[in-house]
Length: 108
Image 1: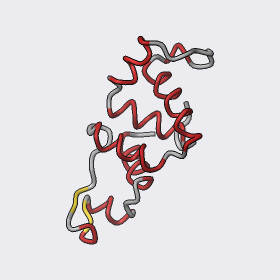
Image 2: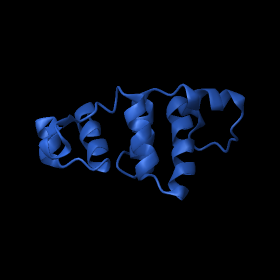
Image 3: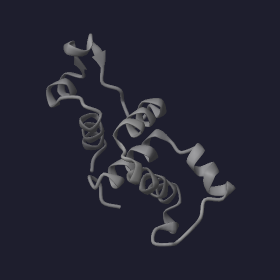
Image 4: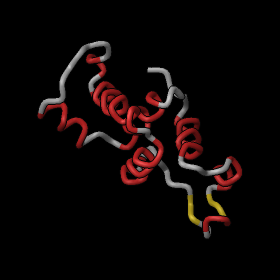
């Protein structure tokens, strides 16, 4: 997926309409602008908190670790302090990828 396609996919998950995304804002939401989820950690964390179900949250955490350290794909691992550090410091873009993989929108 291109960066623009990822932005649109996350914005739609967050509840923005296609028209709002194309305009970059929504008059129905008091002129609020669509966040750039790939660059705004707070915005993508908020979306994850709202759209991930309880079972998806564990899958998201695993995907986020693998996005941060791709060599772990297919490996069984626990979350130790080192991997916890990756999670805490994951970029907005890494979080976007993990969310879209978890939701089945982006292929790993």
